[in-house]
Length: 372
Image (tube, rainbow, N blue to C red; front, top):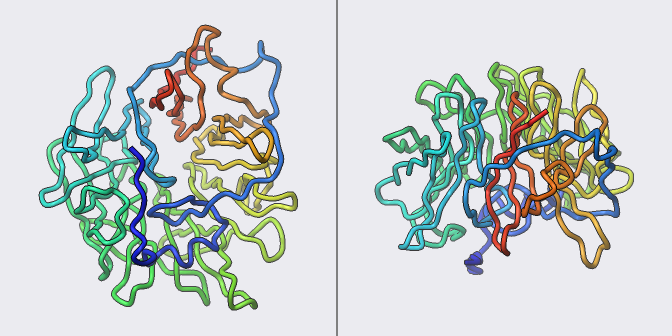
């Protein structure tokens, strides 16, 4: 089922986020549509590529570009399933056991897409059957094995939680009472705003590591009053640091961080949109054109999605970047594999990768586990 946002008015976060990197496509988030430039995945020789076995976690629907399934360090995952009522509900998968997480009372759809090693998960829930309805009440939620806890907002009508660490620190975005959008962190039962960059107002937090360092993006002032420029930002002890950009007047946004304070994201490069790595105080272009990175582990392995092929007929594939080597994950599966991996969302310190691939014309969530 394909969902379309109601056209009555733009949701409050959309006006500024479309200028951001242009990283989301359509619905409910701070990403904007990726404007891709030509590029292709570099590939080692097949016999040198890492190898993975595949665990099929079942069908998964594409709802929005910021809705991705979650993976913890133990190999547990959270995805979403559509019920007979057509509402979506979160599912925890641990081993071969699937556990339906509690649906918040008064809400129709709920999604969990970040999970820690305690199996606590975060996401959001909304009050109408259409999960991308911009007029419904949408709140960030913490899902435990038998509870769904409403995290509230920073004074506005909506919020979303994007990540949780192993100390149960939660980060995301919320509307303020004045309709501004601002990053938050949730610690010890309290949601607090994260300060924006100097001169800016809007911000978002996408990830937090176990030391409590947070990354995301924040608006910065620009001489062109029409253009909104966003820079990747890192918050340490709540204090924001501008991670910079790859080219003058360009934008950047960080999507993930490991426990060494190394961050990854997408930025405007000299040849178009590209993936960056921020390490030791420096942002570097990894040369993954038309790509978007989702996750980085403590071994500095990065996963994401890249568009390849002609501009008129591009297709997506999931990639692994490992210390300068870029792999199409489809070349890392058994030759008998029936899956075509289109996206790679998460990677843990075991090297397990949570991805999505097409099987019999349907998208499936797939857990890839290294075999060498």
